[in-house]
Length: 406
Image 1: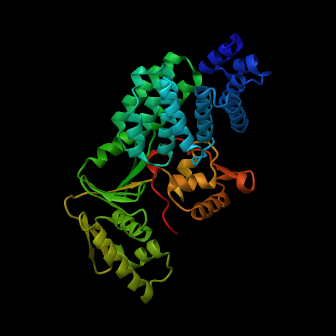
Image 2: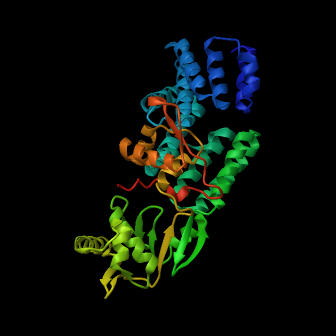
Image 3: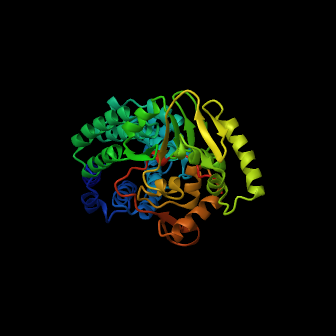
């Protein structure tokens, strides 16, 4: 490489894309195109970055496999930043293999980190954790160590392991400070703030308080029966009953949990579960059927007993029932949690991340747009969606539960 290419590469490594562009902005050879693409990506011009990186890969050709593989990795990172979760997963793995075969372990590890971040957005935590465990962060430069620890913290937060997340972020902060890259330091600081922010509301006997992730971790380890409205689960220390795909049963469980230790009138349950205005005979018959299904689902954890006016929840191995609710009441919280990262998302990427159909996600987006919670950018197939984050709250617990069916 000539001196200008070397200087531009060093500027990019230090997080200074403008200086890098000053060195290569007027050049069209393959190394310059690649560096210009990376610089444009760092400046947020993702569409232009994608074009430049593809041109660079073509110019390098088959005779320079390592340089071409690096372009593929950079393009995959641009796709991830633009939340195109379906882009180049196969070519990214092939590029990683080429880099490892030619001894470029740092960029091969970067390719794995991109895979981990993609899987993390899609809620595939086991696979993300397995790939991350194959990377030795001790052999990486400081910037990549920070990225590695940020990914580890993200997995820990999604698994509600606050202590592990705190330790990972502490290591990420140390590595980021060593790089001197302001954007990386700010990303770690944002993750720390998210970890220390309220993630849920605890409701017990009508009393409410906000909980951090660490407090939620302690609650999940307690003997309480928890009705988790963040993940649509009813659980205790050892057993979890997932009701994400059974919204009627979960609505009934929430109503019973909120009223515990008291009972809930049948009219209230009908209103909550079926949105019925009048408790006529058909609704009462349907309620009996759904209560029977709820009894069956919750049998390892609690009973549902009939009273003179309605039904009451009777936990089996504990004396306390705790409602774990979202920090801010929102419709479609999982969708808003994904959009709250500030990036623009396509409908297909949202559907992939939530394991739902595009039509279901589209209806949810249209409903949120009508309420002013999200907005669309572009038209037709180029349309993407964005939403500002919830002020003062983290969205960790809102992911990756699927959208309840209508």
